[in-house]
Amino acid sequence: MAGVWEPGHRIPPEHELMAEYACSRMTVNKAISALTERGLIDRRKRAGSFVAAPTMHRAMLEIPDVAVEVERRGRRHSIEILERTEREGDSDDRRLLAMTAGPVLALRGIHRADGTPFALEERLINLVIVPAAADIDFTRESPGRWLLGHVPWTDAQHRITATAATAAQAAHLDLHPGAPCLSIERATWRTQERITHVRLLYPGDHALSARFIA
Amino acid sequence: MAGVWEPGHRIPPEHELMAEYACSRMTVNKAISALTERGLIDRRKRAGSFVAAPTMHRAMLEIPDVAVEVERRGRRHSIEILERTEREGDSDDRRLLAMTAGPVLALRGIHRADGTPFALEERLINLVIVPAAADIDFTRESPGRWLLGHVPWTDAQHRITATAATAAQAAHLDLHPGAPCLSIERATWRTQERITHVRLLYPGDHALSARFIA
DNA sequence: AAGTGGTCTAGACCACAAA
DNA sequence: TTGTGGTCTAGACCACTTG
Image 1 (tube, protein in one colour):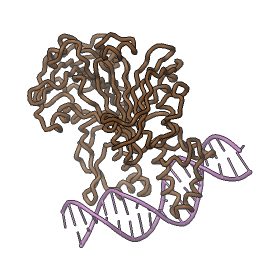
Image 2 (tube, rainbow over the protein chains, first blue to last red):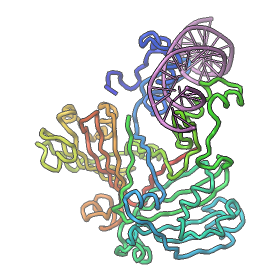
Image 3 (tube, each protein chain N blue to C red):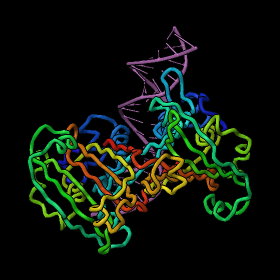
Image 4 (cartoon, rainbow over the protein chains, first blue to last red):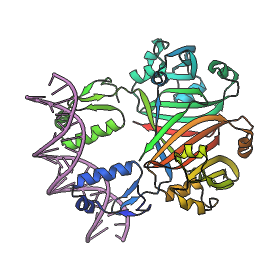
């Protein structure tokens, strides 16, 4: 971190660090492995360990459930379900859920904080994998929170973009049509199967924060 | 991950797992520690280890340098510097760089991919900490890449929002005024000192991807 | 061929918080 | 008070890759 060793510099092998710091190899290995995970060191067998060339910033992004997010700000969360449809998946549904056939639950809802629009949620749930979702009252517990608590997942992928609010979206979020919005799409898997796909639309001034501490 | 153990369930203590899996305590500890880092397990001294309640998604966000990002897409990167000012920091500068006095370098540039506008960059560099930046030709190597390669940093904080392009921004990015844009602000620190503050403005359809693999 | 990192073992001492 | 996790040691075997 001090910059004394340039990127590409070979750091001493583990046995030398053992001697230098008077500790065991396991301890050295743990330390260097931690730096490797952070992307600060590249390790190559036989060749040695090298100061990595930092070509990017890596940051941990925490995306809490909307209900949690609202409550953290000390406000009261509520959700109004605008649309709830149980149907055989159409081609769009099947694409988003990476499924070939079967029923899906389509939800559209508006999250509010102390009654003020906070985020618009459009969600698809794969009822083949989560049949229990068909019987849940999502006004009591938001879909995201229910799924987090009841359906184990192994993999999630996020896509963050900026879009202009359509007239309908703007009306729900209390914005002008065309106002910039932050869109967070998330696909959630369990092993190979897609559990749910959600798109959250926030007013554009909503900030996502990510932090890297080296 | 299978959901057999509900959140809150106490998992067997390390010595039992040693017996169950016929391995040493160090190995058990490594495995459980890795799960803890991923947020799947909560450990409490004396009390034990528990299945964590997954209340949020954590994802690793990789934000490459713009030049790297463009080249990864197989396109040619170029940057045009629109403005370059070396000045005594004004109140805005001092706020963004958390400094009390001293010279700053203010840059504004447009990144292009194969000549097409890609992102607009507005940057402040703290010349007290990075005096060498004053003499660099940033058209040859973009500011972000030069800083990454030459100035060690310890901490970075990101803020992601959606904003509407001003007339000037839209002109540079070849968009309509008011078009939604993705704004990524990054403050970069070395220990207590702020090295640089940058704001990158991308056309709204530019996607940031983040992935969590459990 | 040799030295590197990858990984595991068996044992140990400690701080600490909960019972 | 006790059992838990936190952490370290000294030693070992192995696969691999590269000089």
